[in-house]
Length: 149
Length: 110
Image (tube, rainbow over all chains, first blue to last red; front, side, top):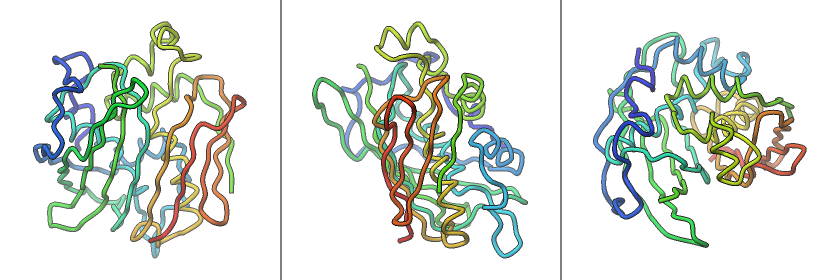
């Protein structure tokens, strides 16, 4: 099992990437991790998920957004986090269930899509694609955050 | 569809333990107030998950194969907030606390 905290640098542990360091088009190194039934159960608990909403043809599935807890770990592999970031928005698109009764090896990749300053705030937009290690596409995420520096 | 989910610091901490988020905005109220907020901030992706849960109930199996959710976080959520999460028949989503709207967006099939 891969807990997100095992693969994600903690804010403040490394010198933070600043707005000036981000380069549009830069790709994040591939991140490989395993989503296990334990992680899915914990995720469902912390987001108050409704268990009966995640049964497909009699089989338990995870909330497809469970990959959200690994999102920043992908980005942080290239740009270590700074304190005080504020999440602005996200778009998640789902392509295939993540089954809750088995381990799923997932590969996360992504890149910086845009950066801009507006009304004194510094915005970063990036995308992350999560696929199974057999190539099955799972989820695509477009993300925007604002950072203080 | 709607749910009311009262917000607590314990909930923020539990989400942070899972995703490994150590940003002090989520657990240091003094720092958060210095930044101009009422208190510590809940994790944005926790609120996306609240809306996604309503969408999973609404769309069933299809949600996993062709669901799309898009949200913007327009105001902070702090401990003590009573958060109402809603998704209407057209797929428009929002979260609202006693202080006003905190999230807007949609959840639909593509």
